[in-house]
Amino acid sequence: MAPSFLPRRRPAGIAFDTSDAVIDRFVRSLRASGPRPLAVASPTTEAQVDRLVEWANDHDVPLVPVSSPQGPRLRGDTQPTRPAVVVDLSAMRRVLHIDGRDRIAVIEPGVTFDALDDALRPHGLRSFRPLRPRQGKSVLGAYLEREPTTSPNEHWDTTDPLASLSITFGSGEHFRTGGGALPGTLEENLRRGNRQMMASGPMVTDYSRVLLGAQGTLGIVSWASLYCEPIPASEAPCLFGADDYRAVAELARRLLLRQLGAQCFLLDRVQFAALLADDAASFERLHAGAAGPRWLLYVNLSAADYLPDQRMAWQRRDAEALARQAGAVPQAETYALSAEALARRLRRSSPSPYQDTPRGMHREVFCLTQLDRVPALLDRIGPLLAGLGPVLHGVYVQPTVQGASCHLCVTLFHGPAQGAAVAAIEARLVTTLAEGGGFFSRPYGPWAEVAYARDSAIVPHLRKVKQLFDPKGLLNPGRLCF
Image (tube, rainbow, N blue to C red; front, top):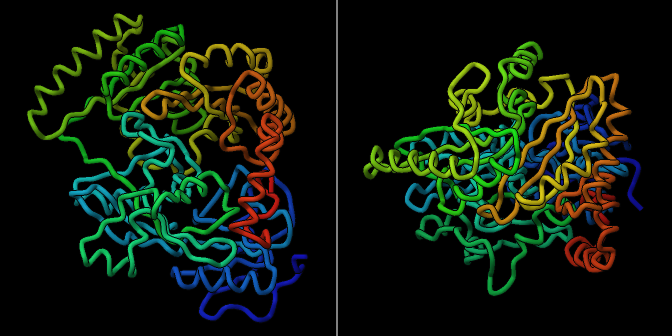
């Protein structure tokens, strides 16, 4: 049984903080409720992470790893379900290596997207970003949770853009995956010219894949290598619109089939307005301003440094021809519809979650599906979203794995007074989407019950994996089906 107090004997060299001010940083703004953490431990090196996990096993102390240095923490996956020590990895924020030729970087878990891009820029590289992450969002945390990036043409596998990982499992065992598993330390291998570019291995093992989406229940990652993209010589952000979702989805399919566009995603007008708004007033102007199509497709055409003007010219021609064939219309640059304004925002983080701008708060429900199945799912949830009063909803569709699948996200924009009602709507949305075939590969909180009920036969196998990697069940207990 986990102790309800912090053991006096603690691992040397690791700072433990029990002050309310620090603990509050890791519990405020959470939807989930639970006991307050026993303390916040802040390791600064890989060796300290190992010692911390060994100490936790010796004293049966649960650990909840957190990598982003600041909140809000909206999904509740870092709220302890029992007295536990929060492992704050945000002090581990070194960019350990950048290779412009191989287009990889090796980073620690506290590195944010803005910090990584600042480090990558002199090497002619930039990170693969999710849709406008908030400032302070951990790159490694986003990738481990499989947050979709806006670059589906460079998404070849569910592990992308992650490569090798350095993991301390809940058992205390240390393991390095893929190209990181060569003998010697990371620094020694970098000096030898070895690069950590492979995700799977050694041999036929693929523990990286096991760790993705595990919400910190199996291991703690001290560093990871990841793929980056070269900064293009020329870029041209474009918007195409249609009142029928099927038209922009068909255009997206054709563009992805031809590998056109560095970034590509679809959103409805409400979600688009939330992305561009600076405050509630500007959101209302964008949302209720000039008439425009209900659905928008953003695509950022790019050209490398070899004949960039010619490359950009034929890409523009092809994109516009494909749009005519699909029934989508290029959107002129106006205050209400600006591809350039959106492109600028996509390359910098939001001071706070952009979804909070319209009403002050938000909730999201998301699942995996396919581009052509989105209309049927939206039809199923339509009655739940009708008549929400002051609560608005927006839709974001992100193609993944080169368009073979997509991330469907429904955002509920609301104020404090609608919190309880929106929570009930969220629960019904999850159930309805699951019944319609939506796949919840990232089930947070109560979503897990719905997700695992769809395939209860897998639960014993997942619990066996948990027993192998975390035999005492000390890492983020109570999450998923653990």
